[in-house]
Image (cartoon, rainbow, N blue to C red; front, top):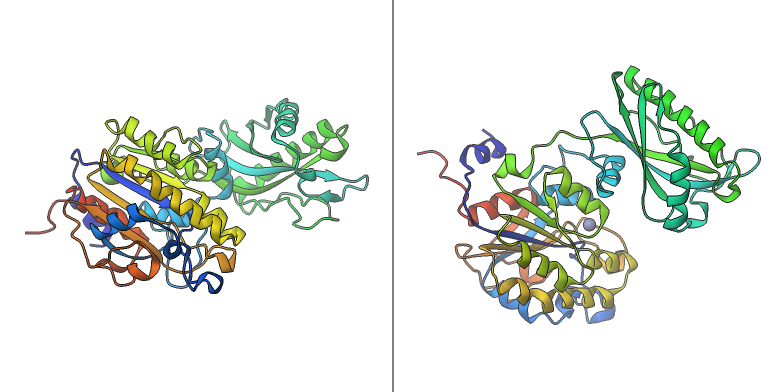
Length: 405
Ligand SMILES: [Zn+2]
């Protein structure tokens, strides 16, 4: 038996409440310009530190040693779906993030408006980053293309110059093994869509016809007269959190991609106000209705990617300040961690393990009395892969039977 099979054989339902707080990209490295501290070490976090003193802490490896994950694999690991086995295509992520309901067999593509010159060369791959309102207007024009060769075309505007196209076939099989039509550089023509097997070759012909008709409809709109397609993908078949863990789960996340992953795993999407206090208040309001809450904080990752140490510190302090809202109606199990590290000096995601904290009546506590990377290095959880976190949280929530006699 492997871990997954054992887990399936011991998991049980009860009423315990589990909250997972994900500070996106929280992990960092010590920074020369700030007295050789990490943002977590530099920030004033009395509430997180107190929680750490009552908890067991450690470091989590998001995917595998030395591997820098995107937020997609990073989150799949947190939810206990092995990111080395499961992939979710970008088109699907974008589609579910826009609250599109995907059916089995649907193929989704990320699209963006672009500018093409008289010779058919792409001169701006993002059409001058047009505002969302303009994208909505252009999508309404494209929506007159409803069906090509028995494949329904569903168009949904996203943020800025982006939109999503969903291809839904009535009876012919379609597949997503199709290249991007985005040439990646300016000064080239869009690429022709080509498929790798019969089902994707058929869909590629539909895509090319969709692009031809679409460009014709946009031909009067000189600066937004083209669009590029990327990330063709099919809805993956994954067990839901209910099937896998017997958890009624909910996501409190504002950004499309995280909402998208959560909804693919069967989480209910709750309102996610802009303020961090608001995220915790949504938990309080819905506490009775769900067993598991995923609360996503985006600011830490944005600051890390901008190399903005002080803004990362500020976001951490906001989480700390809002934490008492959650603690006043304390869940049985609390985890605080991240999906990956985004160190300010690197201005990008990185391979570094993330600090992790698990708190509950039965979590035990170690000698660590503050929550940061270096303190977590010596915590009772040691170093472990993110994909085991959910098992640990279920165990702390007394949701696992004994394995074997
Ligand atoms: Zn992330």
